[in-house]
Length: 90
Image 1 (spheres, rainbow, N blue to C red):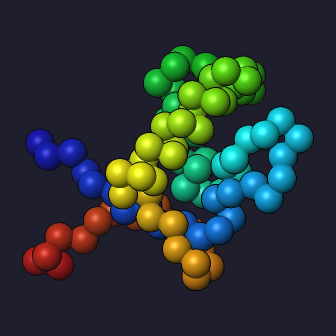
Image 2 (cartoon, helix red, strand yellow):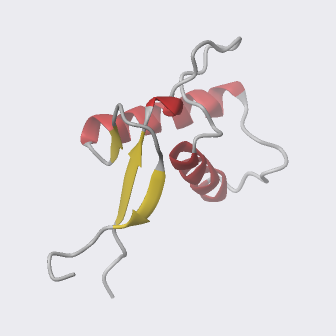
């Protein structure tokens, strides 16, 4: 069975304007939050505990890698979503 492909697009809300701990990405952004929940699950970290500073830095590195690789598309227009990629036949 082929793994479902998802499309991740977001706007400027992916970034923090300023953060007291120096975090770059906004966990409340729907796309970042989607990957945040996956990261917690992969690392077996209960959601109520959250990430340590080092884990957060690693998580943010993964998000930046996905942006650089084109897995997450950041656009100027407003709106964020996670949805299934459409095949050419649809």
